[in-house]
Figure 1 (cartoon, chains in turn cyan, orange):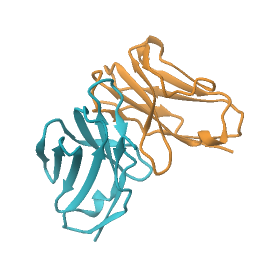
Figure 2 (tube, rainbow over the protein chains, first blue to last red; figure 1 turned 120 degrees about the horizontal axis):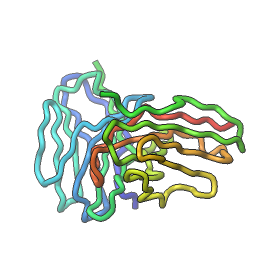
Figure 3 (spheres, each protein chain N blue to C red; figure 1 turned 90 degrees about the vertical axis):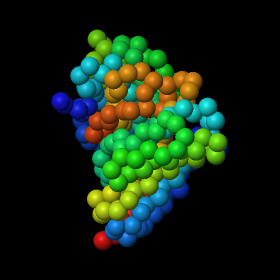
Amino acid sequence: QKEVEQNSGPLSVPEGAIASLNCTYSDRVSQSFFWYRQYSGKSPELIMSIYSNGDKEDGRFTAQLNKASQYVSLLIRDSQPSDSATYLCATHPKYGNKLVFGAGTILRVKS
Amino acid sequence: EAGVVQSPRYKIIEKKQPVAFWCNPISGHNTLYWYLQNLGQGPELLIRYENEEAVDDSQLPKDRFSAERLKGVDSTLKIQPAELGDSAVYLCASSSTAGTGELFFGEGSRLTVL
């Protein structure tokens, strides 16, 4: 079982819709969670971090964490073509400082 | 403020040749990481430095890979000899504090081994 699992996609949504990206993790003691955005040919860029159960909103982005279900998601409201990228979920275990990435979900926003 | 700087951006070599990648982290960032990213995969940690000390190199293939971070600033990752399977993007990242997941990545060095 992979430590961090994501649907590879591609997830296609029309412009203006809500894009929902999901991630599950296997390490029950993971304490912090991150979403990175990676445009084609570019390096990952941190867009959201979440540390406690519930929702965290930042502009059009909302991260949701459910530690009991070992599930973290990213919602992108009013999706724009410029949101088209690969979204990487990453977890940071409580013990050890190794950030573990999922394989990423490709998002395509169609105008 | 300058970001993480890596060079070269692209490198094409024949198998069995050596190659080296250089990274300059964000000023003041004591933690430096080298990640490997294959196409369609997420980054995988090769080595993490806290200042000059390599504190996690468990995923570094030590028979052919080596890294150093002299003076706790710039770092170099070397592969000798390179194999076909080493073709990938080598990402350098830095962070201001140890144990954070908030990393700043450089543009990466894309290696092609022929």
